[in-house]
Length: 466
Image 1 (cartoon, rainbow, N blue to C red):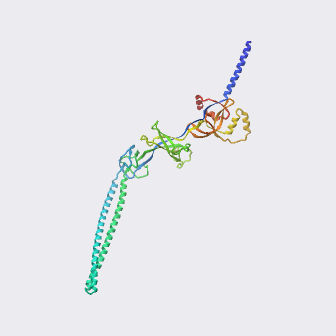
Image 2 (spheres, rainbow, N blue to C red):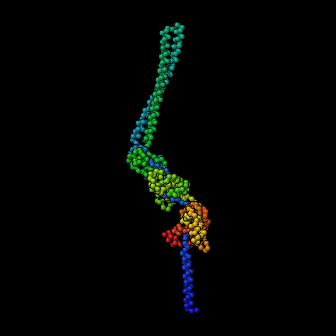
Image 3 (cartoon, one colour):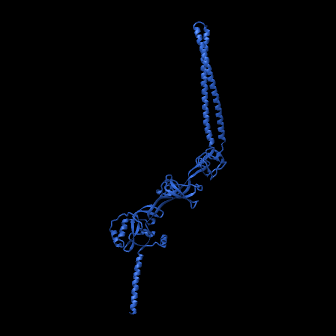
């Protein structure tokens, strides 16, 4: 074989190799690289986050109930107190003097009542004496009348006996009237004394209000006044009218704000994990005990029903989580975060959330059926009547077609949404491989597109940066 023929054969081989390599490279260039994942069964937990602060379930502002200067403060911030313990006292000279004066009035009324009762006894004795005298005069008068009728005594003697009898009747009537008067005076004085006693109860109440006592066992969280300052009766929380704040730390809550898009998933008695910024690494178990019905403006915290502005802005809802166990380390006002478990689905079929897309299933089906036949699809779509797309959610499932891997759109229905995964109720089965990224590719991906699996970390990172 001549050298020319050898050279010619080598050139032909090189040309054919170039054509083959070019064809392969062109085919690879037309294949879309995608990241994939699989539908798999796992325990799915849906969590809603909320931020707020630690608050006691019950707390009260101990207000001033009497005007005057604070003579003594028995507690300071951070003290634990028992129910009924004395917290503070206000000067009480005038209330004490009023009580003493009224007590003297009551004692005087009691003495007067004793005197009137004695007068009643005297009047009763006089009546008894009058009755006995009247009986004697009646007998004398009866005998005199008999003797006078028989002409045995003079009329003068008879008239004397009759006069004596009439005098005895009048005397008894007078003494009975005196008893009635004494009784009336006694009852009147008793009324005065009852009035004085009632007034004394009001005086004791005014005196008692100069002493502030704890309404329940709790923690003193704020004391805005000092000994020697003057407190006044006024509107709650006004300066000079609040002595201190007392919190019942036996039941502690975390009052947090939840975004309006998540509040529909929050319900009473859902479990929650509460973390406190001041106690890193510690988790407090609790449960939801209150879900607010009123939306709060995020910037001001004012309820939307009370807002006078018409601007649209993000809103939150108040959610109260009651801690199952308390500790003395917790203090009102500490910043807290609550992770509320809104749903728990064991062994649920799940996929990554980023795999979900919105597509028109009719269009995607047509594209899948005419994969590789662009001219036919164009002709069919141009002659088809115009229709309004009806997007539904779904995923792209990898399917092998004529030795090529293609991504086809499959509508699905979803359930519980977790942090990174979402439950699939229908449309997929365990093990189905789906397209999960990259976002730039998934956004424009169509059914029937030939794809190549590329789950390399470098490719994913570069796509995320783009």
